[in-house]
Image (cartoon, one colour):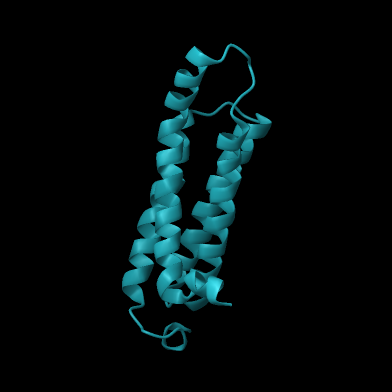
Length: 135
């Protein structure tokens, strides 16, 4: 259980903001990584480990949002976190499945929202223990 300590209330918002920030860096870096590797590799195979990181960030952010919304005192932040995560998930899935043609920059909106919402949620609950933050 010690390994799950990162998902306590105080740490889940830090984890969520960190995961969203890393996701943002990943999104910004992806075009550059593919340009660099294209000059070294002549095959059309993408870097699958790099693409897998999209799903890893979604899973980590899901867990962080789940834990943060469990103990958050703000109803609007709870909804905003889940809506932002759902939007991010749809954008990532759309990239993979190619349902609609959307601008690549749209992924930055829910990512930046998640970072900000986690930081705001952290301000709403500065307790040392989880129970004082629960509704």
